Amino acid sequence: MNDLRPIRAKSGTNQEGTSAHNRRVMIDALRLNGQLSRADLARATALTKQTVSNIIEDLECDGLVQSLTAVRNGRGQPSTPYRLVAEGAFAIGLQIDRHVTRTIAVDLEGTVLARAEANLPAGGPATGVKTILDLIEKTRRDLASVAPQSEQRLVGLGAAMPGPFGVEADGDDPWMMAAWQNYPLLETLAAGTCLDVALQNDSAAAATAERLVGAAHGVDHAICIYLGYGLGAGLILNGELYRGANGNGGEIGMILSRPRGAAEHERTPLEYRASIASLCKLLEFDPADPELYARIDAAVAGGDIRLPGWLDAAVYELRAAVQALETIFDPQTVILCGGLPPGLAQLITNAMQPLLPSLADRRDRRLPRLQVGFTDPWAVAIGAAAEPISRTFDPRFSAILKTRTVDAS
Image (cartoon, rainbow, N blue to C red; front, side):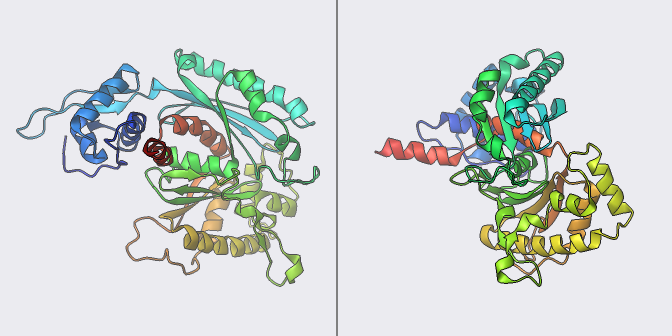
């Protein structure tokens, strides 16, 4: 293999007590680059060749890494490339939205192997939990039919739903899923599935999907603006998803802003003007309509006379949001993604040009300031499924720092 080619990877550490971190670094490097030799891995991760060899052997024994046919380059000894074994791990993702629930199964590389969806019945979690557990069970059976070893290699269940979390809300507030927020969801899912369960908001899940298999793949600093029923942002900082103290990092839809021409006391949440919910209200569409995406795209293509006013208000808010996010977080790129039709996503992105001046407007940019990511109703479910994969296999430098602090004391 060519020892001079650039390789994307995080650095490992040769200090004691960090073998688990180094395994994660190795897996992350193979996911980002595809195939790498031991020499490539040692060079990219700053680990010793012996450390790399030991970890590769362990990963092979665990069924996570596979050696390929040796390759000869020049006069040197042949080198053996290694790659991830996609069937080495599997995860289930769950999306709970206001009107629908989706489940999805992925392998270690993020390939979707099974999916299912169902309308949530009226009555909140009291009736909806059974629908959800039945859907998860169906997805597990479907996964087992294409990957018989999957049950032994399931690393967990990732759940995602609209936030914010832990905030007092009126039970009639259409922007908040108050009944679900107050329900012991994680405990119920863990008991009903016998899997480790973690919960994140839908914008964080969308960002996780972008990081695993989307526009943020291999990007260490990205802001993913999720425009769905509501509005949020997934924050990828230093290669890790930032969740905040209460899991509400990136809830930009809750920012109080003042529409043009409005008085100071008329400030309302940003998502009241920039969201699918606000568009549905204007167009008199039912958000629970299974043909909603097609109806919105048809309205865009047909030049519905009500669209320009909504677009103007949404773009006004989003341009300011992008400028603020760039100024605060200095990302490599901002990605517009989530539960909106592709035609609408492109229309919004085009209308936002030119972006407001910011420190991100640099001549040496390698990525666009703003780009379109996943525009897929399944994006949140994919990100939810990616979370257990990330939790199990991605490098987490915060954990290393905590380990060192404990060791030093």
